[in-house]
Structure formats: structure tokens, C-alpha cells
Image (tube, rainbow, N blue to C red):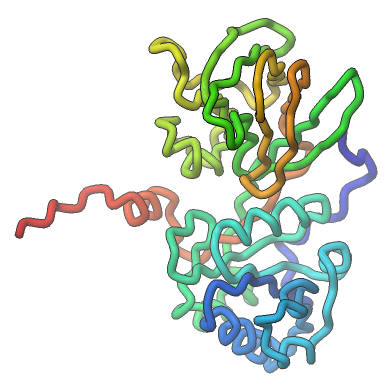
Length: 308
């Protein structure tokens, strides 16, 4: 299901000389941040690349087109790392595009929830010394790869860093599907759908569906039913080497979503086959980063209730 060619070398421990900038324009601050960061890196002797859609977007400042512009393939072939400015959605897209090139990613948060973007915009420039001097810590995250089979033929395939979700689509009716793990029948279920989540995705859609939080070092895939028409179907954690298969039995408008960004329509008797990808994505974490401290901050653990 994936390219079995020899992977490119690991670049997570190489002092970066070429850095790609990737952004999505939620606000004017992102455009300003991209320009400020590009100038700062250039002044430090770094070769700056701007991702093609980032540079050519209608909201992009003209200054960004003064730098080298590349698509994701060009970034994968040339960049030592990529800095992503925006939210988790921007990071997820970059991860899927660059995983096969083994380009490390650094996330700058633009003020939203952001479980994957660790650096606050106000700290962006002060973190560059640590980044360029190799003091960021690499952390590899697993990805899933899924294919949609129809009549025995693959009609679509995609990577996912967060999750692969089969759901009922825009129709209000439940879907019915069979679940198999390593070719063993597990159950038949009528529900709104099923989430297959990586540890990274356990704090995303899976969390809102009462799935477990998995530390990134856990080697597993969480299977979380969406509103099951049964009180006994609970989330299941399976090994990361398991092959998960979902067969659509009955549905009117079912779909499969990859990280909530790539969508394929499904029909009865379609199969969605999910395994761990051979690729991982390397996230570079700033000095002092703590996964549990991040959870405390984002999920407001240990906060005292506000008394009026």
C-alpha cells in the first residue's frame, strides 16, 4: 500500500541549513509572523523556503513571494525541517505530505487549542536559538495508512496522523458495519461510526467520543465507537501491528475521513483496511516540553472552579 523504496536519511539531528515555512491564514497575525520569521532566519544565514500554497494564497503578503517557493515534494527534497504556523489542522496536513521524506516538523501555535503546535507565537523568535543549535528534542509519532476497497480493487488510500473515521455522513441514519481485527470477526455494530485513532489522535475526535488518552510512546491503535446502538460496545485498544478491517453492511451516505481533511464516500460492501504506516513523523519539541504539562494546560486539569 506504500512506496517501499529506500527512505531518505533521518534529518532530526542535523543542524538545519534550509528551513521551510508553512502557514494557513486564520488571521493577519499569521501573515505577519511568517514574514518576521522568514526575515529572522535569513539574517541567521538560513536558506528559507515558503510552501507554495502558503505563498500564493490570496491573503499572503507579497513579501513571501520574494523567497524560494516549493510544493511539498520540493520541500521534502530540499528542507532540513519545516516550521508550521497555524493550528493542528495545518500541522496534520503537513505531516501527511512530508512523512515519506522524513522532514522534522516544528509547530507554532496561533492562539487556538493546539495539541501539536507547541510554541506560542510570542515565543517564536526566542526559540530559534535553541532550534538552530540542536536543543529541540525529536519525538517520533506513528501514522496510520488506510485503503478503501470496492469489488476487490483499491479506490483510495491515505495516511493519517490523528485518525481514520468511518461515519454516517450527512444523513441522520445509523450505519451498520462489521469489524475485523487480524481477519478475526469482532462484532457487528449499528452506530454513527467508528474512530481508529493513533496516540497522537487520542486527544482529538477520539477524546470527544470518550476514547482513552494515549501517551505518544504507547504503541497502539484505539478503536472508539461513535454513539453505538448498544450499551456494551466500548473503546478497544489494539496493538499497532494489528490489521483493522471495517466492512460497510448497510448505509445511506457513509464516508471515511482521514484526519478530518481527506474524505471518501463509501457504499455497502466497501471495505476500509487500516494498518500502521511504515512512515513516522518527527516532531521537534522545545527544551522543557512535557506531554503531561501540555495536557494539564490544554484540558485545564487541577484548576479550581471559578466562584462568583
